[in-house]
Amino acid sequence: MNNMLAHLCAEISCLNDFLSALGREEKAMLDGRFHDLAAITEEKARLTDRMAELDRAREAAQATRGFPAGRDGAAAAAKAAGEATEQAWNNLLQLAEQARAANQRNGSMVYSHLDFTQRALHFLQASTELFYGPDGVRKPTSGLRGPLALG
Image (tube, rainbow, N blue to C red; front, side, top):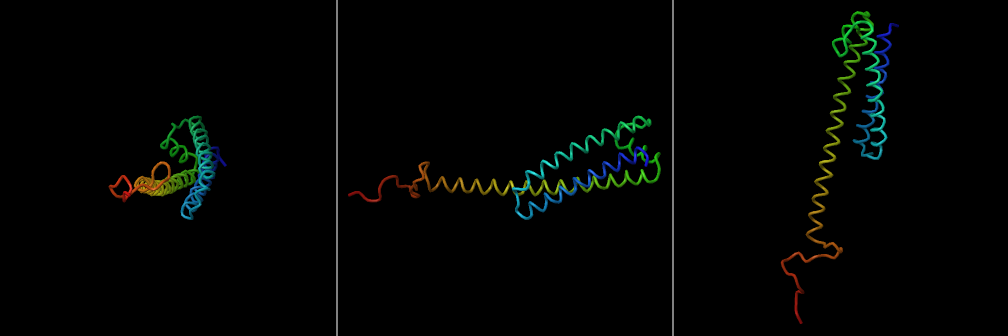
């Protein structure tokens, strides 16, 4: 296996792990297991850091072969390395697009849950202000400020 192909295979493996984490994140949210999200978020951060390391290593390998950094340089280096390497590059691009879409979908779910929670809190806070004072004692709901009857 050539050096470029080895780099791409490592990136593909890491990206597959990231997609798996995104799938677990989505399932946790759909199942209401929000307590699982912290660990999944840590895993995603670790994998993101690893993907960045792998990307830098591949770009360094590209540079030693005379190709520029970036997507165009990677495509040219992969093409020059042969059909298997070019196919690996295309697979990596497809996986990256899947990860982008899944991450965006999960982010939308997070923001939907956050919006719902904020609205519920605002409603509860507004409702509480109408009926209870800071001491927890129910406040009168009418305009009367004193006792209902004197006597």
